[in-house]
Structure formats: structure tokens, C-alpha cells
Image (cartoon, rainbow, N blue to C red):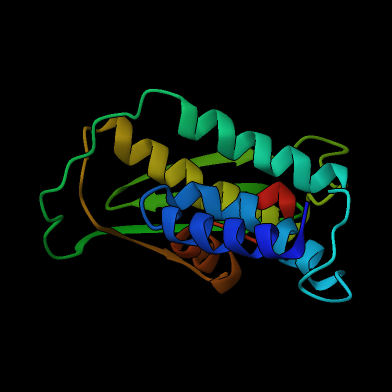
Length: 164
């Protein structure tokens, strides 16, 4: 692949990620690959990680797109929803006067699974709970003491691959 083609592809997919936000996680390897070119006229073989990301994009863009609701979500809803995680115990959430708790298993930590991952799982469990309760096309405030987990969900990506 030429540097010029890689840069063009990166720009195009960056724009497409506004429509497919979870695709941002599959853009992480392409800029690093572009940085390895000695000049914009040279060519290189794509490393396996870039090939895997581009295959993901190819599969997504080749499939039938799901219908998208273009109506505005409205203001953020504050449902009094709180989440937290502990490496010693697990995950907890409080939703008004209801709560949930999930205990971690022995050996859960490793290969990108750390407190940041656990905090992100807490946010994901809260989002799944809202989905099961019928919340759709809404902006809901989820409170967490881990800004990394909240930021990863807002951006649709994380530096920690396990959090994606």
C-alpha cells in the first residue's frame, strides 16, 4: 500500500466513523502505519493489525446498513444512575432505589483487563440495563468515578483494546 493511499483511506474512514462511531476503535493502527513511511511516495506492506482493521471496515461497509433514527435525542435524562467497580469485589450500580451487584471471579485480571476495564464493564452493564428497560434513542446520564471509562464510551474507543 502506498503512503498516499493509506492517508486517503485514513481520512475517509475518519469521516465515516461519524456515522459508525464504534468504528473508531478500528482506526487506531492505521495512523501508526502511516507514520512508518519514509515519505508520501513510498509503499509498504500492511502489518497484520492494519489488515485486520481494514477487513473489519470492509465487512461493515459491505453489509446491509441498519436503519438509523435521525430524530434528535432530546435533552440528557438524569435517572439517578450510578456505577462503580472494585478490583477486590466487583461491579455495582444504583438506579434510583434499586441496585445491582456482580462479583468478580478469581483470575479475572490480565491481558488488558484491569480496573479501567472493570469500570467500563460497569458502564456497559448500566447501558444494557437501560436498554432492557426500554430506553431507546435517548441521552441518559450515567455517573461513574472513572473518567477514562466515561471518555471511552463518549469517544467510542479506548487505548486499552479490551475496553473497546
